[in-house]
Length: 61
Image 1 (cartoon, rainbow, N blue to C red):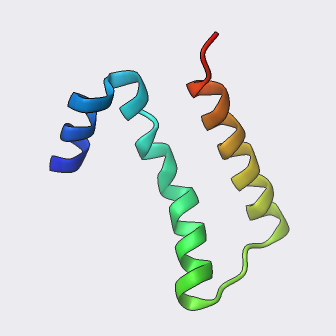
Image 2 (cartoon, rainbow, N blue to C red):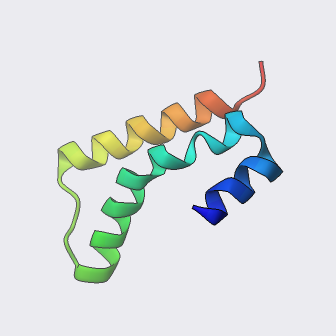
Image 3 (cartoon, helix red, strand yellow):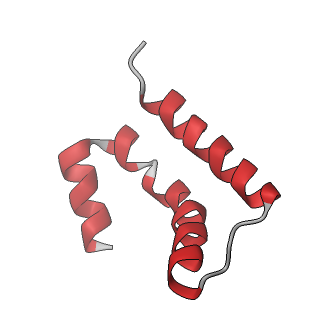
């Protein structure tokens, strides 16, 4: 919680709001790296969708 509050202070509300959306991405990657559970095709498609959303949300207009 402290680190999230610190990120809001340093990055601003709009950019820090992206962090909760990274939980599924990190869970998928950590599961793959730590316990050797490879992502399914559907999970990989979801990962690509989330990352594309991050890109679109952060790019400057």
